Structure formats: structure tokens, C-alpha cells
Image (cartoon, rainbow, N blue to C red; front, side, top):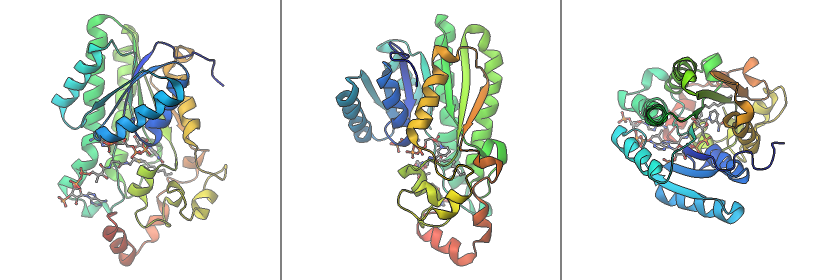
Length: 289
Ligand SMILES: CCCCCCC/C=C/C(=O)SCCNC(=O)CCNC(=O)[C@H](O)C(C)(C)COP(=O)(O)OP(=O)(O)OC[C@H]1O[C@@H](n2cnc3c(N)ncnc32)[C@H](O)[C@@H]1OP(=O)(O)O
Ligand SMILES: NC(=O)C1=CN([C@@H]2O[C@H](COP(=O)(O)OP(=O)(O)OC[C@H]3O[C@@H](n4cnc5c(N)ncnc54)[C@H](OP(=O)(O)O)[C@@H]3O)[C@@H](O)[C@H]2O)C=CC1
């Protein structure tokens, strides 16, 4: 349990902060006293998230709708955020993925994943980093990656590529920006049951990645996890709060996996190797391949 007020006065921007793991982090950060800036493409989703955070914690929450694939829009978002005060922490959480046979990916499909996941996170990091360096302020960049950075992952190749590139960014900036007081850290989640992950990874609801979809059949995926269960979003949020806080002041360039040890047994995608043409046709019909 982290100490009360651990993040008091910290201004934290979370991309994709209106849903899933981003919202879980926002909730925990707010409970620990942080001021939040939430971004994502959908203004109404962000507004609902803000209302909930205000009701639960009396938190200060700025919402800034932004498509992180658009570098100019990202710059405008950071201008707007900084107008209300400098940020202390950036959380690169926004991402996109879906399962697909890699050889069937069109260039547009690949870019639909690489755009937000890789380019978006880099654009945000550049905007935050420049402002911290120019002003001599310290900062923390926390990137939400994936255990695919350690295992690779069949059938989600652009996502695995993007996350691995962001791990390289994390390690590189730890050295380049560390001397200026900017820490770079990362989390590699295993399966956490969010609606976004369920839709993206298991459009047929019940086969591979079944445990990522609330309510879907989960026996095989649970069995693959040494701890016999999926992750709970508040568990990831607790780790994130620690990593962005001064309690982690000497952690730099490191990625922490939070997956019950699952990646030591399986990348999570091997079940899909058994899929036949009919399975993939069903997945494509459900917007999944
Ligand atoms: C142990 C296991 C652990 C699991 C590890 C999981 C690791 C990572 C997990 C996550 O990232 S979970 C987060 C998932 N959340 C999201 O993906 C939310 C955001 N999602 C989106 O924005 C969309 O779902 C999107 C499709 C990814 C992007 O939409 P966009 O509007 O940019 O795309 P479109 O214009 O509709 O399409 C562009 C292009 O892509 C093709 N395409 C789109 N969806 C699919 C699909 N499901 N399957 C195959 N192809 C798809 C689409 O056909 C277009 O290509 P062309 O047809 O024009 O060639
Ligand atoms: N849940 C899981 O099992 C795992 C998740 N992860 C990672 O955790 C993070 C959160 O995922 P999760 O909460 O599960 O899924 P969500 O789908 O809930 O989160 C994705 C968020 O990204 C935002 N987003 C997507 N595209 C863009 C864009 N172009 N511009 C701005 N925002 C965008 C979405 O908001 P909007 O649509 O409004 O733009 C949404 O809030 C991701 O980085 C994911 O890769 C990693 C491993 C496993």
C-alpha cells in the first residue's frame, strides 16, 4: 500500500486515460493526490471519466481530446496542458491492436496500429521532454508496453514491434535524458480484462485471449497463467503510481512485467496456431483478422 498523498501536487498526463487501464491509473493517481490531464480521441468518454474522478476524489482533471497519430495535434495538446501548469509525468498508454494473420495485413492496417502505438507515444514523449529540458524541470515518462517485448507475439506483429521499439526508447532516453532529471520507465502488462483488449484480441469472444474479455470463456487462458488468473487493473495502477513517484527515484530505463509470470510460459498467442481457415474467416467477419 502506497502512502497517502504520495502524488500530491503532481500533474500527470495519461494518453488513453478515459478507458481501461488508463482510467484505472487515473483513479489511483487521483486518490494519491495527483492532478490529471486525460487525453484520447473521444471527448464524451473523457468527460465521463473526468466526472467520475471528480465525484470519487474531488480531483482536478483537465480533458484534452487529441488523436496522438497527428503530431501537430499532439503539440497543441501539450501547449494546452502546459498553459494550466507544467506537467510532471507523461503516461504513454494509448495504443491500438487487433489479431490478424500477418501476411494479410494491408499497409493501412499496419499503420492503424503503428500510428497510435509507436508514433503517438514518440510524439508525446518528444513534446514533454523538450518542455522539461527547456525549463530545467525534472519529469517522468512511463510507457505501458506489453510482455511481447520479451516474447514476441504471433498474430499481433505490428503491436509487438511498436512495443519493442518503445522499450528501446525507454532504455535510450534513460541515458540521454537521465542526467537532466528525466526518468524513463515502463510496464509490461500481461492479460488484463479491459473492454478494449477484449474487442481487439478476441473478436469471436471465447477462443484465444479469452481471459481478456469479461464474461468470455477463460479456462485455457487462466490455466496458462502460473497464478491461475488474469490481472486486475488496480494492481497495474498501483505499480504505475509507485514507478512515477519519488519512491522510485532511482529506477530509470527499467520495464516491470505484471502478468503473474505468464510470459515465462507462453506469449499468449500460441492457441491461434491451431486456427484453421474457418476460424480466421469467422474472426475477420467479427473485425478480427
Ligand atoms: C498474454 C496475452 C496478453 C495480451 C497482450 C496484448 C497486448 C496489447 C494489447 C492492447 O493494445 S489492448 C488495447 C486495444 N485497444 C484498442 O485497440 C483501442 C483502439 N482501437 C482502434 O482505434 C481500432 O480498433 C483500430 C482498428 C485499431 C483502428 O481503427 P482505425 O479507425 O484507425 O482503422 P480503420 O480506418 O477502421 O482501418 C484501417 C485499416 O486497418 C484495417 N483493420 C481495422 N481493423 C481491423 C481488424 N480488426 N482486423 C483486420 N484489419 C483491420 C482496415 O481494414 C483498414 O485497412 P484497409 O482495409 O483499408 O486495407
Ligand atoms: N488490457 C491488456 O490485456 C493489455 C493492455 N496493454 C496495453 O495497455 C494499454 C491500455 O490498454 P487497455 O486499457 O487494455 O485498452 P483500451 O482500448 O481501453 O485503451 C486504449 C486507449 O487508447 C486510446 N486511443 C486509441 N487510439 C488513439 C489515438 N489515435 N489517439 C489518442 N488516443 C487513442 C483510446 O481512446 P479513444 O478510442 O477515445 O481514442 C483508449 O482510451 C495499451 O497501451 C495496451 O497496449 C498491454 C498488454 C495487455
